[in-house]
Length: 205
Ligand code: NDP
Ligand code: ZN
Image (cartoon, rainbow, N blue to C red):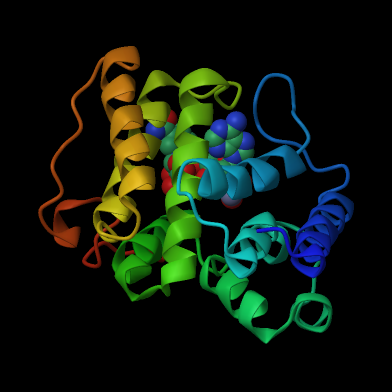
């Protein structure tokens, strides 16, 4: 990918994300700059997934802007176009729902995502789970770290067959998690088996 126009658009997305996430930090002990995560997701797509499609890389850099900052849809549409906005919206949780409902929705709807959104979902979950192994959110119990990785595994189970390299890296992370967090991941059978399954009342906060 050597096209100057495409490189410029990717760097512009990095500037946009850095400005939008300004003052926003990750949950790790050191409170790392949030935008590091946005860029890490895009880099993972590139260097592990071997994907160099600028549309996907830009959407990856912007993937948490609408969910976590005051970014308006129109800003992304005007600056980066309709296709990128559409992918970003696919990976944006509905924050009017409670956390359990959002977790359920991710498991239930993952298979409906576009290819670009699935790639971002894979890289986002891989990046977050590696963070949970190496630089976890402060004050998270062992149980909470285990639960997050189990949930991420259940989301990713819905989109297998998207990118073998990212999925292999995810599987490697899962076996590392089983050792580091000393537990055994459960095999996903049906969504109903999980606390984020559709039969659970998600109305409680
Ligand atoms: P959160 O959704 O609150 O936090 C995880 C998210 O934080 C990630 O998806 C990631 O999102 C972002 N993030 C920021 N910094 C980091 C980091 N260093 N490492 C990893 N992720 C980071 O947590 P949960 O998924 O646990 O959701 C809350 C749920 O947990 C609720 O349903 C609640 O009931 C339950 N809970 C469980 C407890 C337990 O002990 N088991 C205790 C309290 C609550 P992004 O990519 O969007 O930035
Ligand atoms: Zn993210």
